[in-house]
Every structure is written in C-alpha cells, then in structure tokens.
Length: 304
Image (cartoon, rainbow, N blue to C red; front, top):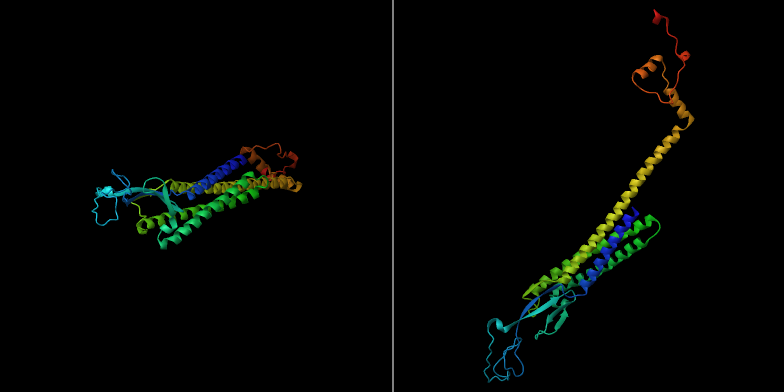
C-alpha cells in the first residue's frame, strides 16, 4: 500500500511540474493567436525599373510634383499585401512591410478601452494560476520526501490538492477571458490592426494543455487522499472487530461464565438426554457424562 501511494504521489507531482512548465511557456510567448492582415502596398522609393512585390511602382520618381501625371500598374488585389501577425497576452507582433523582421506593440493598448480591464484581470489570473500551481508542487514535493507521521503526510496532501484545484479554476478563467478579449478586439479594435484571417496558435494550445495537466494532477491528489482515508477506515474496522472478539474470549475465560455455561448445558431429565441422542447431536470432548445413580427415580405408576 505504501509503494502504491508513493507511485500516485510521484504521478501527481510529475503532472504538476508539467502543467507549470506549459503555463510559463504559454505566458511568456506571443503565439496565442496568429493570422494575416491585408494592407495596401506603399509607393516604392528611389529609382525602380521593374515591378516590386512589396511596393507600388509609378512612372516618375518625383512623387511630390503635382504637375506630373503618375501612373501605377498594380490593379485589384495586386495593390494589397498580406502580412503575418501573431498575438499573445503581452504583445502583438506584425511583419515589416519588406517581409523581413517584425514590429511589436503592447496588446493591452491595441484592445478597445472598455476591454483593457478584462485583459488586466486575465494577466493577474494567469500569474495567480502559476503561483498556486507552484505552491501545490512544493507541497507535493514535501509530501514525497516526507518520512514520518502518516497524518502529517495526509495534511500536506490535502493542502496540495486544494491549491492545485484553485490554480486550475483560475487558469480556466484566465484563458476564457483572453479568448473573449481577443475576439472583441478583432471586431472593435483599430483598423490598422484588424486581421483578415486568424486562428489559435501553439501558445494557446500550451495554455489549455497546462490546464488539463493541472486538473489531472489535482484529481490524482484528491484520489490518493480519499483512497488513503478509506484504507485507514477499513483497517480501523478490522482492528475494532478483532478487539471485540478478543474481549468476548476474555469474558468467556472467567470461571463464573464457564460454570454458568456448564450448568445450562446439563440435561435435566433422562428424556432430554435421549432426545439429544435421537436428534443426532454429537457431544464433544467437553460434554457432560452423567452417572446413572444421578438420574431421578421412576414413579410407581410408570411400572404398572
């Protein structure tokens, strides 16, 4: 039983550390969501003799001269450029116009003003999620390394389960708040940020994988605590039954109790003795042997 408890404790601790690693990785990266933005190509600068992929070419190099008629050759979708972007809790980054490098800005200031409070709550909840998860992992480590009273180990186990469950609930709320804030930013955010297409990315998957590992760790910890309590209760019942049986045997070993049982087992008449023999009841080695002289004398009417 002790080896089984230690295996379950090691499993819960491993899941806790896995959830902590995934949560920190998700929080420190900016790939919760990624997609494409459709932007208008800028005018090419300097002498350009051929068509460019990242800018619009025109027929004159003097773009500020209003007397010169400017001709551009891009029409329709050729005037637009698709730029990749990715967003996390902290930053939103977008490709530069020449498709080399990125330009990042704080996602809090990209979101609408009425949604910034939700984002701040999301950040606080994510930090508390990691803090409570780390606290639960420390308590689990102390329980695994604990050698001593089993009751103290159960107390550590109970507190570890409470902290892990609370951290899982906070993590779930934080992830849902970010999802809501991002979708509202896509709908109501600034025009120079709104994406053409977007989807959830690997940091978002890491965040929810961390939540899954956290809840698995908490369920394992609670199951271990409950199973240990039930095992102790079962052992207690068995000990109580054993003590009751021993107490009864001790009571039966007293001379008065044995004499009472001896007297109550002696047949009062010969008829009862014959009934015992005809009913097939076998007398043990502790049976009572009666002397024929002790039997009561028959009455005179019985011989008539």
